[in-house]
Amino acid sequence: MVNKFLQNGRYEKKSYSAQVKLKPDNQLFVEATCSPVPHPDGSLAGVVVVIKDITGLKKIEYLKSQFVSMVSHELKAPLAAVYGYLKILSDPAIQISENQKIGFISRSLLRLDSLLKMINDLLDISKIEMKNVNRNIEELKIEEIINSVIELFNLEIKKKNIKVEIHSS
Image (cartoon, rainbow, N blue to C red; front, side, top):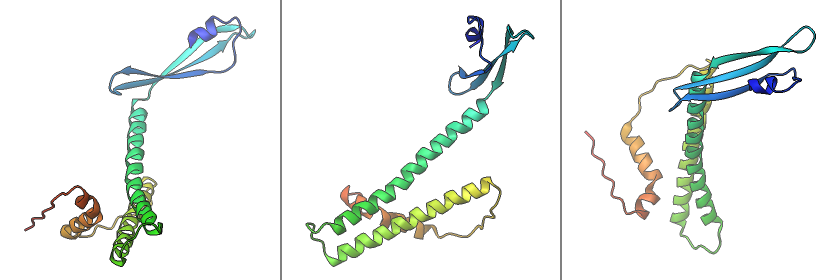
């Protein structure tokens, strides 16, 4: 970047920046910014380089990227399931019983309910970051949650012939 200024007889009145990884595994990132320093007559007197450690920012950027990827996957799964159920229900060529219809609709509602809860959790995270929320801690019944998850994945469990056993005390 310094050579952009030194090799050129003329220089532009603008700065150049670059981010550089100096250590592997995201241990050290720096941002270097080069700016021209003019003589009073307008010729180039030199170049000033400012180097800033941006490792913390890069780590946050990486974590946010991982978070977005994970959230995208978690949002996609229930939407894909509901989409599949709706395709089955709307296809006149597929003959299904009334009980199957009710099952598809109830599974879709479960998936959409979990999707809404997830979106509300994401909104809560946003509010927490803006420091605008009070969290209510409530008691949960783990057996109900486990049964709900098993019901949610019931089709996949049956397709893959998986046996699920729950032991609680």
